[in-house]
Length: 600
Image (cartoon, rainbow, N blue to C red; front, side):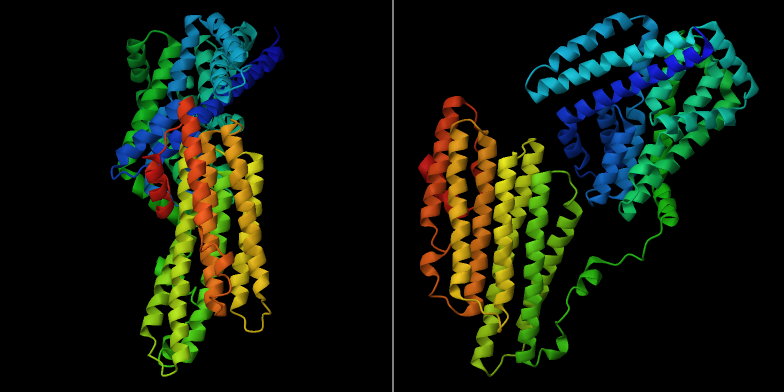
């Protein structure tokens, strides 16, 4: 085989190795991804716990870059802070080193057996169940890693290729150049694991000396940060800072160990020789020790990395939440507290803003529920806190308004209290949708296309009801009773229809019982949101007697349907041993009491 053919074959082996890594990593994330994300967001006071979490997740999914990108996503969603994210990154740096040990097993001549393992993995992918397909992908990826390594080994075994590589390394036999080569090449292929595997094969095949291999491994540690830096483009301020922290950590660890290895290279090679005589194993264990100790020495000083990152990526001077939220009040002015008629008009305008925010809150919560990608989590948290703040401060403002002589103004102030109370309830039910979303994510449950379409359509109708509430404040708005009565009736009919269809789909096995329950919980929360919106219109329009018979206020028939539906599901699922009903998870207290009585 000619030199150019060896090089082509070598790149082919790298391609197979990277494909195998991605196949194994993506399928491991499918099986354990949600559990790993849940583990990562657990609150802990000790940085070592976050580092351990990062290491465990990296060991499972075999990708420090994937864990780092995950951490950046959580920082972007305000689920963890920069210090916690840096600890996770440092743990992940060590966790992914296990792939080097796996690659070194190639020297034991077990490629034939692992080639057969990849065939078993392909067989698993023929199964219909996604879980078996994912297991098949993992097994197939594991086998393909060794096929890729074997291709690289065969390329490096030819004397012509060895001579060219040796002569090139002799010319650049300078540690910093070797580190730079490792950095650039790893950045290009975007996989330090592939680079580690390549060095192991080259040293094992005597195409590269041990000393050069150690420095290139150190360079690969910096090169892998390219993927992370790219992933932070266009993200939030703290996400970009997390990327910089990752880069600083990699440069620091590599810098320290480059100097150490440069000074004590001969001693390090002797120690590695005592640990294991196999050159492939020596490279693998050097990679493990290097990443372990670089993580351990960086962990206590991670806040320095955070400080440097905040200086490099500068943002506006951070203000407290309350300072930012005070700007959300556009109309309230304490100077008018002694003028009730003006103060009351001001509070009405603020309530309209809170209604609009509540509508937005429902939209982003439903989007997150249907997409389940953590894209809206940060916005959900900020919007929820802002609404709570505005509600509380508006109520405080109402309390401070001087008692008016005019009885009509006094009634309107009381009505504003009622409106704020309904808004608190509406956002409580919206928050319940967020809780349902978290439970579904943890259990890896997703709505199908038909249910997504139904929820989206119902959400759009409820948005129109939100708009009608806002319009109801306008004295010039010609809002006939029939306008919102017809809309409410339309929403109710759709809800009942969806309710019945969900029942049929569940008992016929078209959808799972868990999915069926989550769907009716969403319908129940929608119904309660509508009920409170309707009551708000009634208060604003002073037409309390007109809607009684056509409102969500009288929900006995709906509650009876809900109880029957849940009991039927319980009976059907018990016969199939598929349901474990958590009574405490039912949100509506009245409905829950009735359900408990009927079950008992």
